[in-house]
Image (cartoon, rainbow, N blue to C red; front, side, top):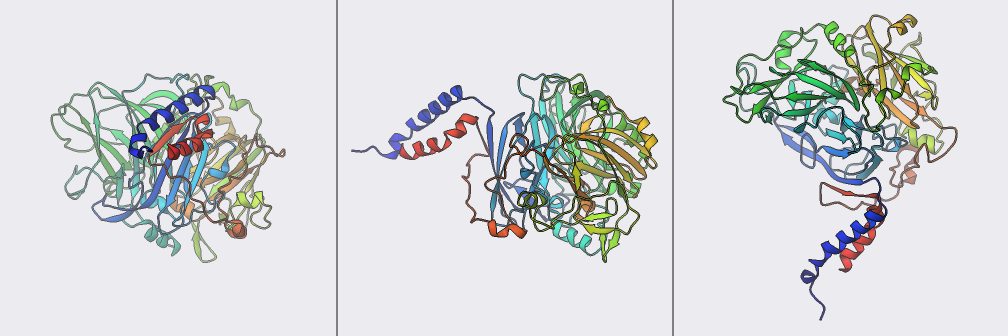
Length: 595
């Protein structure tokens, strides 16, 4: 008589475990890690007003992708919103694989009710990054989370192992949801000042009863006295530069967006939209009371700053009481010179290794000949064809219905033009889909000239670039004499102060079509972005991966779309397999059924 399933199950884990171990020992490779995400609306009241936010697996902020250099990452995204959705991986270089970038130039949106699986490798990367929704102004309602890429065990880290590792999200916040904010911009109005600043999706501690209403839940960072923690701080907001500080504690800067930095202590740090920093903070104060952790708006008047200030609590386990009294002072609010000098003080740790054992400074960027120069001019938003738009070099980008990458792959004519001007032209601003034709293995110099009145942040997907100079005034050829050609930090997002310029250098060695955008969400939404196409004349999978078999088709290629096949849904938040395990994954599932 056949045994019942309940009698067979105890044997199954041992069988599967033995199979995995045997195959792994024979064919060890880079691990695979699987995540299954449900993106849907959830309700929250971070500033005391109930509103709809975008959650990932019911969490706001979403779960952290905690991975290691060279791991293969598979993220199955179920879009349960009422409109199309895409998620992008801010700072991940996605070597040879712009197909997975998650922006409208490379991907068709995931329709409501569909799921789509991202597949990429974090090749030769370490550091602190975050993911967020890239379309429909969704980021204003959440949908973001952290990405932590750890060093492999064989690669030394240039500081001692901290006692804890924490991710902190700071960002301005509106009590209006993304649809309302989108409508304001579509009608030609400005968003106005935000309603507050959140810490990890929570509102401010009630440090002042006349400013902060009662009933708001605040974030608490729990620590042990004498221990040192790594704090990964991300500005995930819409448009506000924030000054981050911890009362009575120094912050040792050690990393920013994948680069180890020269280790310097700061009492506060200006973190602009889209930027990420890692600090080591030692809990070396007495515990007579808790301490304030503050993120306050920069470059606004005092009245507005009081409203746009986030406050969390640093709580020692042996604390004797709550934090009280005034918040710790930050820098003078309108002092952009302080902020620029602070930015200039951040240097690359050229003697440290990162994803590889060789020193970061072994790539001597200052000795490479520049092949292309682009001066990108930002002006205040202006009406174009009756609508308020933002521009770079007089061009306000419009997304075509067919993603650029798909149009390039299938030779669809008329979708875009490879004619983005290398400097501002003396002509009226216009709407266009014009992209930069980058030179494969070229070395591009980009100067961001900000002639508007607010700080702007700019980000380039697929690359880390070297921030070599910034100053007030108009950039000229003579400005190159001020460049830092030795230890300018390599990162993926840089700030540009109003009435000032920032210069970056980038080695175009990653084939694909890559998004260059304003991280300020309102500027991005109104057209301040473009794409850089980097094509290897020799067609080979060694420099660019092929079109993924699960690609979504839209626009002129809609007829190619097949009926969606839903991928296997993993019951765990994440599961790790090695390369060899993936090869036998189907066999294991079959055995689990047969046994």
